[in-house]
Length: 249
Ligand code: PGA
Image: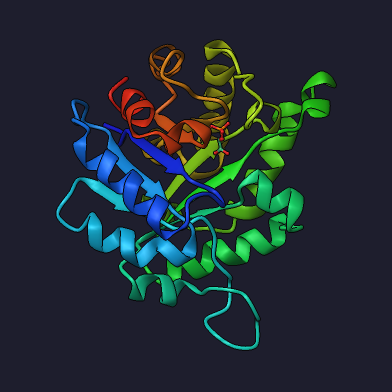
C-alpha cells in the first residue's frame, strides 16, 4: 500500500507571527484521513514550526537545500543544518526553483544525493511547461527530468523518494490538469520507473500531483489510482482549505 501524502508548500509567505497564526489554525483542524500531512514553511520559521508540531501529526519539511555540506555558499542551507532543527524531508526541484534560480537537472541530482546521504526523504518535483504540452511533448520532458536527476540512484534509494508531478502551467494559475490528464501522466511516470527499477519499486513510490489543487477538485484528483496525494501551494495558506484537501482522501 503506497503512502498517501498531502504537503503544503507555503513558499515565501508568512513571517513569524503569521506562521504562528497559521499553526494555531492548523491545530484546530480535525484529521479524518490516513494521509501523511506535511507543511513547508520558509527557512526562518522551520525550527519554530517543528517545535510547535512536535506532538502533532504534521511533519514540518523544507522547501529547498544546497548540495554541499558546508562552506562558502552565501545564503544557502545544507542538509545537516536542516536535520539539526528536526527536518527530515525536503522538497527539491520545484518549478519556481528551476525557473527563477536556474536549478538544473544536474544540480538537482547532486541535491538528491546530498539529502539521501543525510538520511532525508526527498519530494522531487518536475513537470512540463505549457509549450511542451501544446507541442505534445510532455512525456518526453517529464521522462528526461526524472532520468537526469534520479536514474543514477539504486532502487533501494526510492524508499526515501516521493515524486511530485507539477505541470508548470497549472501552478498558481487556477488551472488544473484534469483528473484524467493527471492519471495519464502518473501512470506514465510509474511505467518509466518500472522500466528502469522494476515493478516492486514503481508500485511502492508515492506520486503526488501539484498545481491548483483546491477543496473543490481534490476528491476527484485523489480518486485516480496513480495519484497518491498532492503538493499544495495557495490553498495550504488557509488551514480550513488545506485540511479540506487533506481530508479528501
Ligand atoms: P498551487 O502551487 O497549489 O498554488 O498551484 C502548487 C505548488 O507550487 O506546489
